[in-house]
Length: 424
Image (tube, rainbow, N blue to C red; front, side):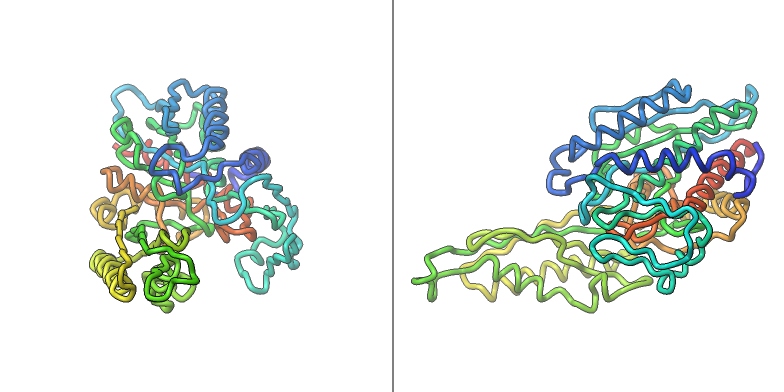
């Protein structure tokens, strides 16, 4: 199979890719982290896209397509190499759910074709200004897709889903192009951090896998955060406020005191680069009981352990400050820094770097200030770096994606397939 650059493939796939992406983002698939521990998928609506993908893969001619009871879709496209030629099976993975931080229902994407280089004004006074976004300015004259300002777009990760599906369809249409065995994997609930909890990794045949879940065109990511969540429960004592003196213990006030102990200079909005952070993610409750979810992140194993101990010390301090109150903490690991394992597999990184270069640009190698299903899969023993899908401003009403970035992502997929087919 040949290696492809952007110009050699764009005319063959761009229109179809755009149509597919627009179709997928209109399907409501927001996940729910409040129930993701209890069931997978966490929301029934994710099945709508999963079943559509199952059907489309079969329509492409992919015969081995399995969608299990937990919403994990695994399909296999057999290789076409000569008998006796053995190469590793590789997989491509994306997630179907969207984040709950911004509305994900009734998405109305706007197509700017061609983007004229001016300020884009959306509903809710949302503005995309190229003067503040060199990335946006760089797509003047190209096709850019935005939200209308009322919802997120869903490029995280329906851009990745659309790219994988378009690449698979292209490969099915071009049986003359050499390829090894491929696996296509779509997952639910990635945005909850718990989407891989029930993943049947023992069913995979892939020696290596790639998530299509990155942002800026050209990014390749081999490092992510260590990520944990803390469920902090506050038990107070409720009594009528008229007779509360010396008796009431306000669980809401306890939760507020805990939040105030989180270092503001170590919040997501105050950090970048390789700095870790904490943030209060959700709080609910009343006078007698309140519950707070705190997320915290670090690129360093010792530092994430330090942050865990800090969370516990904050809880002890709050409990001591509210006589009669009780504070309990439950810590959960969400994912680990995939660099721990990927450093042991330089081959996969070298081939990904080569595939990006062959597409016509130099790779942008940086750590993810977040995580992917790939980081969980890497910890399960299948090295899985992350590739750009093209989306910008994830989880927000100002999310956008440029079609050229999505086309280039497909060239990277095809180049990886081709490179693996030539390996022995």
